[in-house]
Image: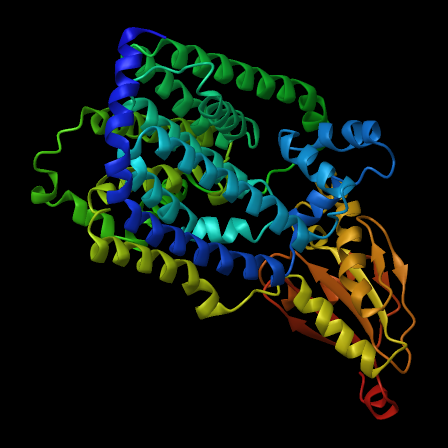
Amino acid sequence: MSDQSADARSFVATTAEPLRRELLAPTVIAAAGVGVILAIASIDAALRGPWLDEFWTLELSDSRKGVLALIREGWMRDAHPPVFNAWATLLASLGVTSIPAGRLVSNLLAAGLMILAALRLSRRTPEQAGFAAALLLLTLSLPQAMESFALYRSYFWQMTAIGTLALVARHVAATKADLDWRGDLDLAAIAVLAIALSIGVHYVGALFGGLLAGAIAVCAFARGLRRWTALLLATTALSSLFVLASIALQMPSWLAEFDHSWIDLPGFAALGVLASLAIAPLWLNPVPLAGLWPSRGQGQRDPSRTWFVAMLGTVLVAGVAIVLAVHAVQPIVVDRYLFAVPVLMSALLAVPAARIAQDRWLFGLLVAVAVAGAARPMIEAGIAPLWRENARTIATVVAGCPTTQVYAASGWALGPAAETRMARREDPVFERAYRSLAAPWGYPVHVIGQNGSAQATPGACPVLLWYEHTPNEAEDDLPAAVEAAGLTGLEGTRLSVVRSATGFVLRADRLEGNEVSRLP
């Protein structure tokens, strides 16, 4: 270790303890707020109903045919890097096979790793403890974070990874000592894991992870932190090579099977999505803006803030520009693919928020607003049943008339892409979904695949046709919905429908004698 690094560490050691005592109160307040936010998120994750993409997670983690077969027939045909699929497969091998359990185990771990990273980095640079606490609060209370926590997908991992990488960026911009391979293994591990996940979990999200990792490396090099520079560049390069290798291996399947894209957002609307993601942290919690008040910046000149803001600002501008340019050629803008944007904006807001960390009342207000923002969706709308709503509707009908026949079809059958290979590709996932949703209620489901057919026999009990993931207003033409499913035998029946937020259940009742006599 150089003399300069030794002096820097000595300085930190002599000043850290008083600073830690000064920041104890806001740290405790922030910890309480984070605990409440995670409790709210966990309740939602445990009780919310499932949806299509989560059944894809179950499909791509089912290794009953062998891991090699799963990799060949599943991961290599997916539209995402294999990292999260491998993680879900590991959880499945350990007995985590339900969607609610997967959400809780996976996302609580991701949140825990981000919190641990904040604690370890704050211990090395105590003056950044307020920033770390604010970033945790602002990130975890985002509507996008609360939504992603209740999904068994990779989106929450993507958000926590980019948030942790922002913590690393703040540390590299502020530290006075280079990385010590013997004493800083925890910091090195945090940086490696944050970069690897922010780049390797999602192809669109990888853009922002790669840009931020590169920006941190440039900052480290400019500040003379050679070992940090080497670690950052090496990890970024290896993670990028992994992503390129994944694309190369998956590309043949994409060319063969991905003959339809459901993303058709016009360019101006895509810009609106990105803008809404960028301003979300600000309208959700404007309290950090109090830190911009001139009196709170007096005597606190800190070049590291300039470095940090420049890094994140550059990444946001460059990332958004690249996304819009790619979208003009091949539509890719979907809000959940770009959750790195509100996280990076939260990191920028955490800079002025750190200036109010020692003001208990003002920082307490920041925590209160964060908790209120996290709780608001559940208070306003309750816990969404999603695909479980129609399953319960059918269960009620079957309970009242046990010989009810239940059929189900893919929502693709009702859209313009019904004849595509993409539609047929999702048949196994829809079948898994319908059967697993019906299983707790004990009724059988006959699933009709794309281009399939089935013959129903109306009797004393109705015939039900279950559709999930349907286009808006698809239930307006019930005869067409029956025909699209390939279901026959319902001629001369009375058709009705029950619509839910995610799909509908079509009901066919046999006409009584007086009703038949009135038919033309």
